[in-house]
Image 1 (cartoon, helix red, strand yellow):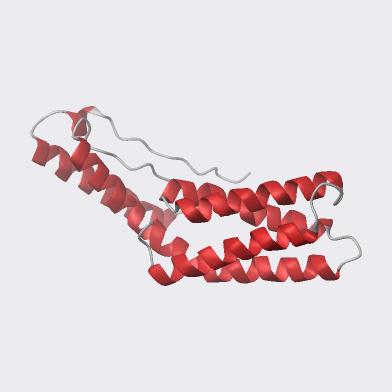
Image 2 (cartoon, one colour; image 1 turned 60 degrees about the horizontal axis):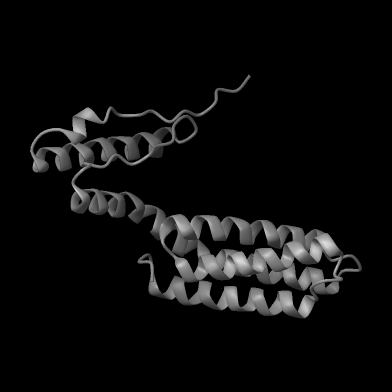
Length: 173
């Protein structure tokens, strides 16, 4: 049997008590260690960022710093995701039964909607969610409620926003 990944935790007391600068430094050190652990043993470990609460300013800064690499990876991957969506739409338009490529496009839109929301890319998330809902309605109704034209319009809007965000880089709008 395979070993399941785990998410180690760090006690709140170490980052929530004491001088603000010490709490910030401890949170940064813990997050750096955890990031390095995941980079070397991502098959075994996941992480949650530690924040120096109740220091709101320091906590927001640490969350922003922790999400930075994820935002960079997300925006770098947007062109490939846009190409996949385009390819799935072409496959759907040429298929006798377009449900399979549209289900795959729905899965891509679902992932984009969720990750975009977490990372702060609201426009991508909103358009991905709208595309996912239209794709879901198409698949559930076998095309009776939503046509391929509407799906194409929603996916085109999503792809345009993904391209725009990829050009802007890893800072959310």
